[in-house]
Length: 420
Image 1 (cartoon, rainbow, N blue to C red):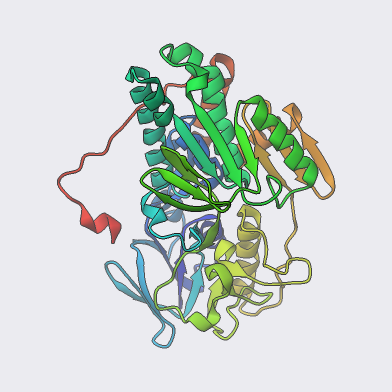
Image 2: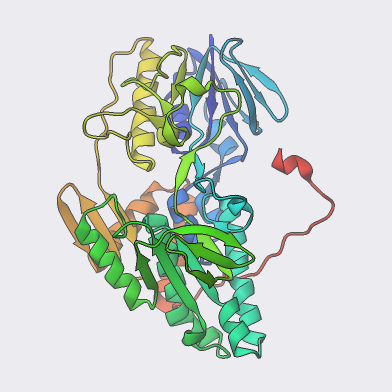
C-alpha cells in the first residue's frame, strides 16, 4: 500500500481525502490547524457577524469515517524530494506520493515588517484578532473625550479592492451606519473614517467592470470612502506613506491587498513560479517531480485562457482535487484537469452583492440571496449550516448580533510551540 501524504486540509485537501481509495493508499493529512475552515466568510468573523466555530469543522470528525487516513498536526519545516520525506514541527513522515495543497498567505510586496504592523483576515486567528481590535477601538473611542484623538482611534484603512477588501469594508460600513446609532450613542458616524484604497483603477479587478461599478456604488451608500489608483508604500508609527508621496495617520490597517503561495521550506526553488506558486501540468503533477502534486491556490498551470494560472478561489481547488483523486484511484493519468468556471460573487453588506456567471452580471437583492445560498451549502457540517443560517436570520431581522465580544487572549503561561 502506497503512502500518500497531503499537506493542507483546505478545500483541495479535504476533497481529495474524501474521494481517495484507502484500499490503495495509506493517507496522512498534515495541517497546522486541526480543523477545516471556510475562508470566504472570514470577514464575517472580523466584523462580529459570525463566531469562528460556525465556519470551522474538526478534521478528525471528517477523517474517522474512512480507514487508513490519519491527521498529523504540525507546521511543515522541510520537504526532501530526494529522500521523499516531509518534516513537521514534531515528526518526519515518509511518502511515496506527496500532494501539496497548503494554500496561500498574505503578500506584503517586500514592504519591511508590514506583517507585524497591519491586521489581516487570511486565517481564523487573524480574523478573530482583527475583530478584537475593531471592538477595542470602538470602546476606547466611546470613552475618549478628545475629539481629535477619537477620530484617530476610529480610523480604519482597508488596503486592497478585491472581494475580501470590498466585503470587510462593506461590513465596517454597515456597523457605522446601522450599529453605531443604537449601541454606541456616545459616537457620531462622523467620528469614524472607513476608507478602502486600491492600486488599480477599479474594484474587483477579476470581475466584469459592471460588478466594479455596482460594488463602488454600494460601498459609497454605506459611507465608505473609496480611493482608486492609490498605492501604499510604507507604514510606520501609524503613518501611511502613499506612492504619490503624501502621508496620513491611520490607527488600524486591514490588509487584503495580495496573496502568495504558502512557503514550503526545503522545496526546490526551480519548481516555483512567481508569487510562490508551484508549476504543475494538466494532471496536477509538479513539472519535473513525478511523485509530487500540487492543488488549489498554491498550484499554477498557465494556459492560453489563464496565462497566470487559475483563479485562487475555492472551485479550482475542489475540481482539481476530484480530478486528481480519480487519476490516483485508477493508477493512471487518464483524465486531464479542465476547470469549469461556475462564476464569481462578492457581497457588500445586507441586500447588496454582485454576481457574475460568464457574461451574465447581476447585482442587488437577488444576487445577495444567491451569495447566501451558495456559501451556506458550501460550509461543512449540518450544525454549522444551521448556526450560520440562524445568525444571518437574526441579524437580518434585528440588525444586531450577540457576538460583539472583546476576548483578549491570556499571555501566560507562554505557549511558544503554537507558533512552531
